[in-house]
Image (cartoon, rainbow, N blue to C red; front, side, top):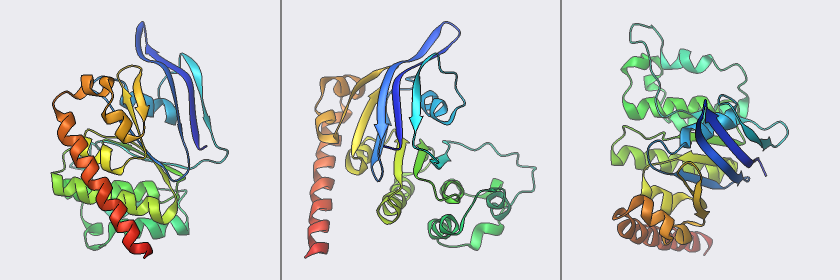
Length: 242
């Protein structure tokens, strides 16, 4: 167990944001959190990394746990002269293994000399992911890391995440609004709306009344796509083992 959240409650003033949250993340698994806007998803991440006030409950982390964090947006002052390479160099706790994985994620280093403010959305998200990998984390927290990307860009980003998990064993806890990705890429799904409405394997969650109440008409198409991708993944694994 890498992270365990026990009976977590978070509130700002008199407003309860999260109530009685219980969840865990283990090595090599991808856990995805879904929920409507304002459901407390980002607040949960902030509580895990220690930047949100905990009213009660606790968060237990594995000793010496290394966490990589990719935010949903990075606000950059366009007048600031900061290249992608300089931005990555600001990480002080990087190691050789993490640097190698970061280079693999970047693929091409051609745009490292480009100003951060001039990178495309996909390039910037790849740089943010590379930065999160520099300390060779045990778990990655991805807060809607594909927001603003088109469908091909999102698909390419999540493919990198799956490849990373397979090669390094790094666990992934992510917030996503891409329901088709949730169903095809996750080991477990958690539906959040101030509290945990339901959680479990993608197939059982997709058929639950609570999930349908949250996402309505999107469900049938999403579930069909999950079944299609699940069969394709299973076929690919069987062929590689043959």
